[in-house]
Length: 292
Image (tube, rainbow, N blue to C red):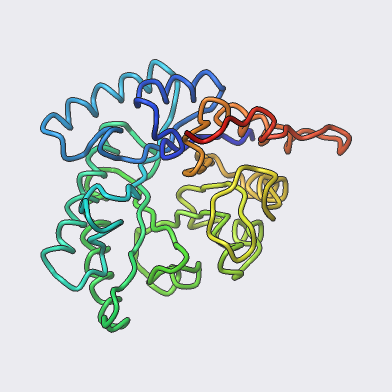
């Protein structure tokens, strides 16, 4: 089985969505991880449904599958990054997050996306963790039920520093129908498991996978070859479980050179899958341009 790769549009934030999709398709990817944002299919725009239909048609013409990502920084609150969340103390604010996730699921249904990925959030100071877990379970139950009715796969991503930050945290939730969004780099940050081991252990629960390089203990998404990720080992583990969904490259800090990073990242992944250690891996900094 051949692994299928996608590129996350949060790493092409300086490009129009159509231009980013063209770059991703031209590079040879099989899909796109579409981070809904103010300039990339704004889910709160008046004509959001029509725009989703247009993007769905464009993806079909380009031969790209998709995963919907929901980690835009200031989409819900222009003054507070990633707020509100499923663990925000204010019930009305939590309902806004649930409403957004339902809208993301609606868009995923229109795009015929493989999954919709989201995270729990960070409890604010003074919030009791047990109470926050109760709010989280309530929100997840509502979101998962809605996704089931729309034929969309809901996936929770453990995120360093959040209430659900490890794979064990995800497993402890025990929410039926909730799949795992596995970001392999996060395993290196938390130190809980080696990324390849996480793939093998959670094989039957993975709904989508993100891959990038990352240094152990440091939550910074790095270009391949700049951190501690055993990329070849992760790809081999995905091969071993017969993973047939998109494997999404997430380089959210590389928008300033998306034009070169998009093709180079795929070249690197393909190089990791070729037999023979004598083949050199692409240098992802060889064509680097300065940040403007």
